[in-house]
Length: 355
Image 1 (cartoon, rainbow, N blue to C red):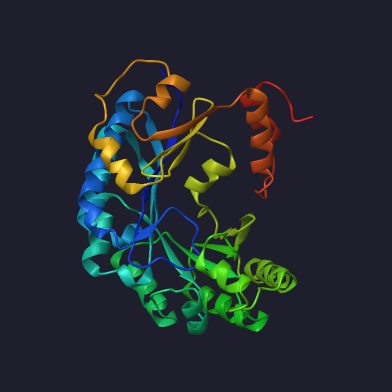
Image 2 (cartoon, rainbow, N blue to C red):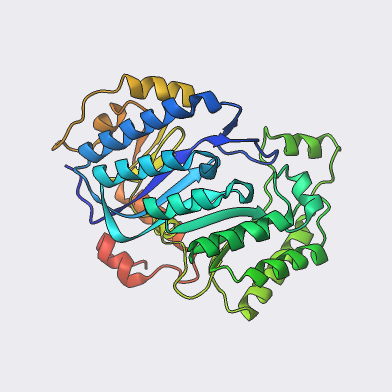
């Protein structure tokens, strides 16, 4: 039987109104007719996992995608109700929802709060309107500012914004301007990622074919160095390679990943790490709905091993992780953090020291 003090829960929402040309995630546009069936399938998977894992405690929940804010807020509420029934979600759990600036309404924000969402991650990417066009974003810089303020007015006090640097035709001064505008909002948390040209995406093809300039890696490095100085001076802790936070506002959910902790992912393409097994679901939303509609009855009180995991309707691949691999991965992931590897924690977990 699965036994763990607590886990993190990731909920994948694969829907987008439009798919950005740089995005390599398992997301889709123009499949809105699948939404209602998808929610039913997702509720079923959550129920099955709750029973199989004997209703473990959940310390963080993260709605990712895709664009979770594109889903009707009533569906988000229903998913949260299901998660609360299947798991023991801690009273003070961090519950994050990824969102696009153009999706906010007062009604949606109120419903989020009522359902238990207490943290928003807003995909701003840049405050340069020309670069927003390059990235295929649906909002303007002003839309992003307005959305942030709408969220705070609604009662959200834990908000993260995503920014991107190293973009085609982006200048160092332009990046510094985006940083300045971001800091005017004083968000508790900012994630900043260097653009990666994902193979198979339209943006990668445009650059490869010479239709768009190839981003300069040396310039991107200069942007990163400028970011570190600017954020330090503004009072933010650079607690992870791509993440900055005000005191006590680090992403608790993502820290689970970086500390190589136990987490469960539900939805198509979602990844999990439980009971020294890494596994992931099939990617197709249509096939996911089909399999979950034919899923078996809930089971409880059995060992969580490779065979059990492979019998779950949506699981596509399972890999057992031995202790040596777990130790190596814990060390590698820990190097992303400003705290590095905490020797006392490592020794408590593995019964030996790092050295």
